[in-house]
Image (cartoon, rainbow, N blue to C red):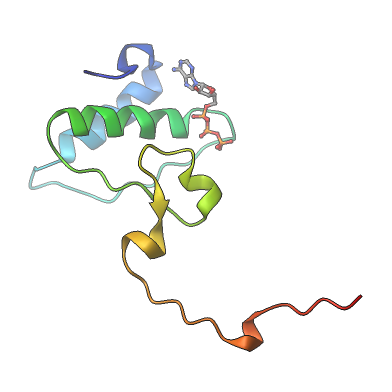
Length: 98
Ligand SMILES: Nc1ncnc2c1ncn2[C@@H]1O[C@H](COP(=O)(O)OP(=O)(O)OP(=O)(O)O)[C@@H](O)[C@H]1O
């Protein structure tokens, strides 16, 4: 099922199509999606995730913060997804005084 793909505006459809075409091709790539707040970046990612997963392929939605992971289907933090070791040292913590 192409989740909400029919709702995409032309620019969103163009971006979506470019990324879809790159999957499995010799011309695969690294895409950086940016734009004003509320312009539809998350909408593209959600639709993209649904379309790709409906083909039986794997999408790993990773974000830099836990809050952002809540916006993405199956989202997890990048350090959890990629098993990035984060060593927490006492001097990394803020100390609040009353
Ligand atoms: N083509 C569309 N049709 C209907 N609703 C859309 C469309 N594109 C985006 N939206 C809606 O517009 C709102 C903002 O979109 P979205 O959250 O994807 O923007 P964003 O670029 O990720 O924003 P931010 O940078 O603030 O996180 C959402 O409610 C989303 O569902």
